[in-house]
Image (cartoon, rainbow, N blue to C red):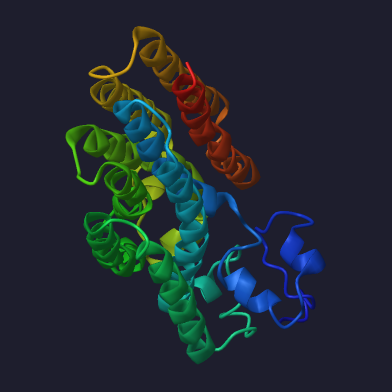
Amino acid sequence: MTEANPQGQVADAVAGNWVDRYAPPAARPFLRLSRADRPIGTWLLLLPCWWGLFAAALSQGEFMLQHLWIAVGCAIGAWLMRGAGCTWNDITDREFDGAVERTRSRPIPSGQVSVRAAIIWMVVQSLIAFCILLTFPWTAIWLGIASLLLVCVYPFAKRFTWWPQVFLGLAFNWGALLAWTAATGSLDWPALLLYCAGITWTLFYDTIYAHQDKEDDALIGVKSTARLFGEDTPRWLKWFLVGAVLLMAAGMIGAIAPTANPLQLTVALCGVWAFGWHLAWQLKSIDIDDPAHCLTLFRSNRNAGLIPVAFLAVALFL
């Protein structure tokens, strides 16, 4: 930890978070490494899982006991794999993080955790998550294993492409495919549409997020859609909004229309509309030159992603 930050808190952590307040001091650096003090990433990884799961349940006509375990297993797995992925990201980005104002307080560049200890922590989280994955059908297990390639590649994407947010989207929304497959036993095209909707949504929210670091990123040579789009960002965000809504609507129709009643489909599509409304509100209020506001909007995507989940849950009981 540094003199400027003697307690070791990370600069962009949620104020008064449970890690800084209640976690044992010895555990805090590792929990910070896993972003446990910044829970938005876990939500953004989990919510596409629940989209796929609830859409699959509607396609089957009911919410069964196995679906409840998939929902819980995905929640635990999202927390663990987000932690493992962030640990891997911080290991590979430790030089970059030390050069950026917002990230230099992270556990590795600030000296709270060694690289060796971080690797061990990453492996522990991954192995526990794998044990949960083993409770799912074999097709879903293989999908979960395949996602590791995306997790491994993502931290390097900003070194070779202006579109690292695409790689983040590919990794973060994999749960839509996995949860659908765990629920139904096979992968089908509605799940692929929900996956693509999630990728487009990721391009929306992570471009907003990347505007926090665009000046530092330019100095150290890190690429992002924020730097690529520049002042044209709102126009790109509008197209990502439209794409996410249309793809999600198509996925919902494909999943629900063949088996559900018209009221269930209507409720699900209302959820898609409300999701789009939330993104439109973000787009209307964005100020790409205000890092604090960008972070606030980025965090609001937890609520945006929960909206379709809530409407799908209601539809299941109609």
